[in-house]
Amino acid sequence: MQSSHTLLAQTAEKKASTQSISVDKRFEKELQAIAKKSAVKKALKTVEELEPQTIKDHVLLTEIPAPPFKEQARGKQYAAMLKAAGADSVWTDEVGNVIAKRRGRTGAKTVVLDAHLDTVFPEGTVVTVKQRGDTLFAPGIMDDTRGLAVVLTILRALEKNNIETESDVLFIGTVGEEGLGDLRGVKYLFRENGPKIDSYIAVDGGGLERITYIGLGSLRYRVTFKGPGGHSWGAFGTANPHHALGRAIHYFNTEADAFTKEGIRTSYNVGIVGGGTSVNSIPFESWMEVDMRSESPNRLEGIAQILKASVQKALQEENQLKRRGPSLDVAVDLIGERPSGATDPTSPLVQRSLAATSYFNVKPSLITGSTNSNIPISKGVPAVTVGVGGVGGGAHSLDEWWINDKGHLSIQRTLLLLLSEADIAR
Image (cartoon, rainbow, N blue to C red):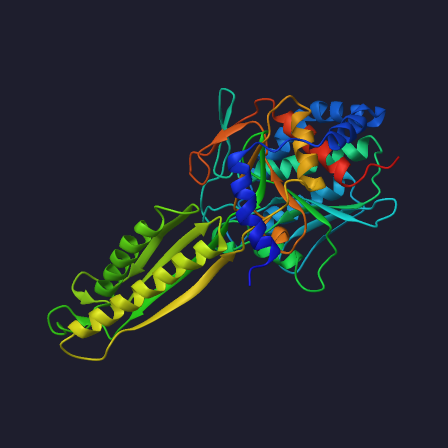
């Protein structure tokens, strides 16, 4: 039986593709009333005044490596920065998430503002920021170090202008958002007996107009064929794991290509292959890592079944061809899973996101994406991911870049969104 969030993920995408979702006037008025408050006007101005400090923070954090599963150094620095910015308490949890709490007047509700600490780049990658003209270049300069700077500046602006909220706010730098990190930081936040979280705002990727409200689901598998191996001449005829892997990729690509040409958008990719010891050795192991994504849980499960069937077909055929020795074995291991789902576009959080974006005379763009928001959405907790602002590109490449083209607007937008969602104290 499909959950309500699964069904919503399917229907929300259809709705978004066929009509624009308008902003409820109630939330427009709410947002405008918040923006008119004297203290909020000062906070918005503070964001602009903090621009040099925000860029300095942005560069400092970018130049602290945060490879997958090794975010500790950046996390330690970020914790110190959040504490200096005025958070009531700051701590690092068991998996490495850096959490800063700003207490609300009542604390009846808890709102998260998050950016992720990790990058996709392996240990040893040079992360020195270089500036050419108005452009900053460095691995991770946009995804998601800019998000960390946005979160930090919002905390500073609130503190400097003594703005209180009714809700508690958790300012978080999460670990493990990228790649095989598999959203481990946010998954830990939503563990059984984890902190109470009522709504979730992530800052990650893209420009001012982007609002991710549908979580793009993904499955990642490592497929490993194993055999006895041997000399390419002396053991010729022994079942070959590489040959089996090649067959599996061929069958998977053929069937998956046909499957993805129709229906709700679904993707697949054989991203990494490995194994073998030398050109004149029959490998004892051959493996690949496969990524599959879809806006539909049913389609995602469908393409996963194609992968598994292709692997078994390849295994059987290669074993039938062997002339000597034992048969091959294969293991298909799930190494990553991001659930899909959607936040109702008529919900207060999405409507507030639309209103906060429209306030800056920017047309909001509701999109599907794979971000930290996938987890709260799948748990039934309202969540969105908003863009970091400015202009950037080359994400996940060594030539990643970012330009501070009115980057303060995204910070101001996110500040207004947070104040509306966390209920600014009257």
